[in-house]
Image 1 (cartoon, rainbow, N blue to C red):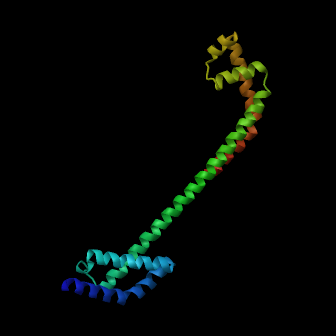
Image 2: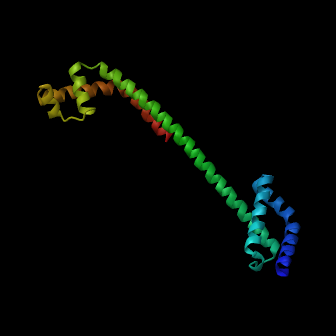
Image 3: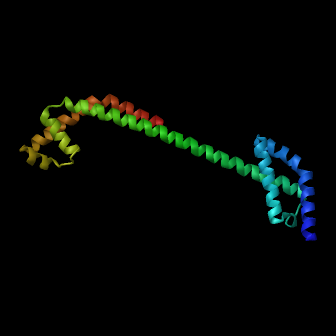
Length: 179
């Protein structure tokens, strides 16, 4: 019991002696008085819990300054990581929104371009791209020759390339700049 009382007195003496100057030091590193106070208290808490005075090979003052420095640096690093993560999340959300808007616009433009195609060419394109049928399956279903199906696809793709060229160039630019 007297040993514990002696430890408490010694700890209290160290705390009173160094707290204010350690707080000023932590404030210089962290720029916030409350955070500096929490950091110094954390260092003293660790000192108390682990009875570090027995492990200190330098002066207690040097040990405390080094501990405050390390705690402060770790706190700054955690803050920087958190900030980077939040910025990444905001960027990802913004990119997702841009991508969704681009997808909606592309679908609108595709619908407009498809509506301008002759009926058979549009039908062949939709069966090939949306229903994922092979040219031979389309030919069989529509009672057309394979060459006729290929001709309709060539016409549809050429029309879509021309109609969507400006939009796709802008979309590609947005994607490249946004990344």
